[in-house]
Image (tube, rainbow, N blue to C red; front, side, top):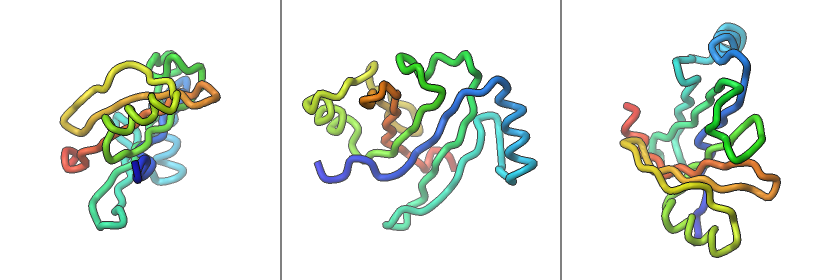
Length: 128
């Protein structure tokens, strides 16, 4: 499998007060925040529109489980189903089942440190 990760899809982290943090980043660093955080738009090497999501989440979120980490990275991938099959064959821990939404497919794995990583086969056009 040639291309596994094609870019950073998002960075998610725990915080006591997500709204306060979003406001701070908006006022101090100029992030265009909304209820999810901030979406950064960019173009891939073929010139296609792509996005990366920055999202603070409540400390009590269970979304990062089974990881005990206070953050989770999301990586953009080209073929999620095939990639998860390859990773499983390589001994990588797969977490849960693939989920599909109008904006793409998602799967999860654990790295050697136990950090949960989200793999996203995006449909960026869904955000426009």
